[in-house]
Length: 134
Image 1 (tube, helix red, strand yellow):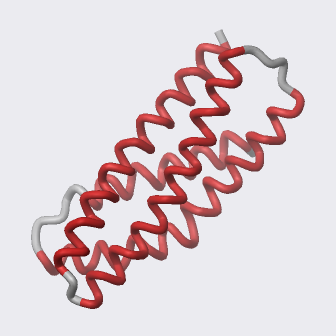
Image 2 (image 1 turned 30 degrees about the horizontal axis):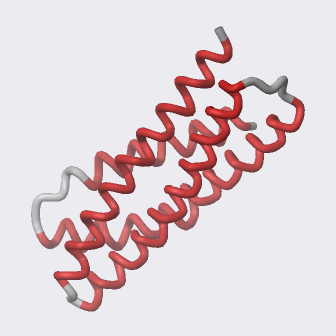
């Protein structure tokens, strides 16, 4: 279950990254701001929560070492980062709907920075997991 939830989560992040970075004009910004929120709400949030839950269940029975704690720490940090991203995506959508371009630009920049941090944390967690498996 953990690997399946992780796969859905990573697939969602990859899809969102492609969509986010292909925006070229205001109409596309409106569309992305609107469509990103329900994806976060109905797909990404359940996926990262299930990943966190199943990871916690696996952690209870695992032989502990520093790599396990590094992997779990990076994974937990990724979950927290993604939760922050969800809040920013909603705020960004709301600012776009209000026509507040200054807030939208600030939140858009923050969302992309958090997204980059999220990817980095997932890479650390995955690399640590692979190192543990060797």
